[in-house]
Length: 288
Image (cartoon, rainbow, N blue to C red; front, side, top):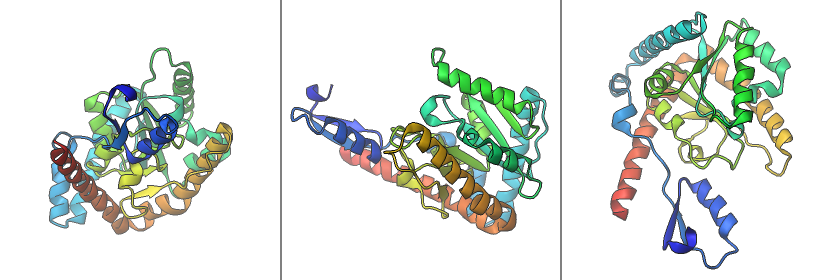
């Protein structure tokens, strides 16, 4: 396909780097540029949150997020029969279930997982949602594993499906939107963009679109990436440990102990997701 085109487009800057390395030795390939995938602001943004942001109303932002969490938790109760608390920090992993996206990243250290999920000091609630492709047996296996694990913990839930209405509920109701792909495997990914437009704070590996948006501890939290020369198992173990460290030492303490700082990160994410869309529209208009 590259040989038949005058120009090819990567879907993020990191994706461009990967494609250039892959095809760099072939002199017959065309130029490879990048235009990062995006989400539609008008479709996904929560305007009451943006209005509260415009008015510098921290209390309104906090009130809206708790209201949205209650709405999400009604679906959690209906599907899973568990009652979640809107005052507890809620982490959402919602996307296609496949191995490289690592929906099971928490399970690489079950001792730490059990400690975190049972903590009474800095409480946490976890929601998974999505579905694997019919023939993706590793994805199906991970989904089944999470289903059985959630049966043992009343602060863990897995929802079936990821259609637009459920996706909207999840993004509005999430405190943390988790992105944990194996580094260099995510071409772009877009769920975190619309999550930020709904007041969810991205916590993730700097892959795909994320490095173009993320300002660590300003509009998101960045998990320090591992050395990709390691084996796959070592990469997963290392990234899982880094994620636990980040949650335990920075993310959860900020949520519970420094709520005003937490709201500032939400507001920066709202602003930066809107600004990023304006930049993309300018680029596309200029190219046209």
